[in-house]
Image (tube, rainbow, N blue to C red; front, side, top):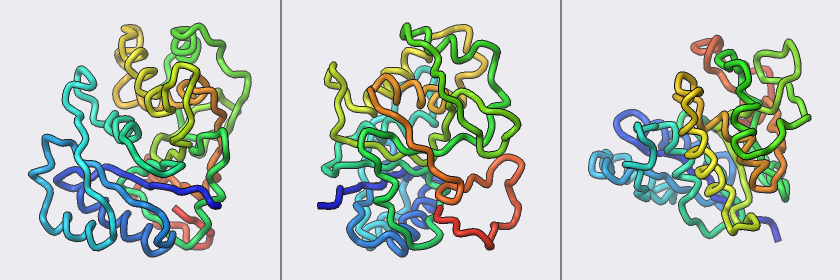
Length: 253
């Protein structure tokens, strides 16, 4: 039996509620009816969601659910809402968080991205913000060595680097538990909260806390990482923002 999957994203007014509708529509068009869809809205803003958004998501069989975000991070950290969304209960074998500004571009078998014992995510575009000793600091906070593995980033391919991933598209096994009984998402939140307290990283934690802790959280959860190929998550931000979409490649998202 094929593993079951929920794809989910943040539905937040004003603009991200509409982007989420486009994302949901692209998933329904290209990935088939068996994929479950959930949109999460910060509970204190649920009353602001446009009725048209609610109805659009309903017609695409996308549940709209509240999640408590206030007080989770101090100071508030909107990028952390994706970790909160990952923590929410779902009934499928796998969960997949997607940034609301992603679109699925063509039909493909999303099941090929689900690798048992792995979290699937794409190499980040770059890490030009990184301070000296970043990885020694955050891995050392948990008495863990910096991984020996190296990857190539998506846009900066000058040299291999310590694994660093985008948190915009993250697929993970929801049934996996650590020896302490924590899910991957709970491990990610615990890791982010701990690293958020490191004063020497104060200048760099916003808005990179979720991404800098993702590979560390994967390791702490006892999982491995499976790299998305660029055609499965083509990041058009940064220097590529506003450039034409590359139509001569089989890009899926």
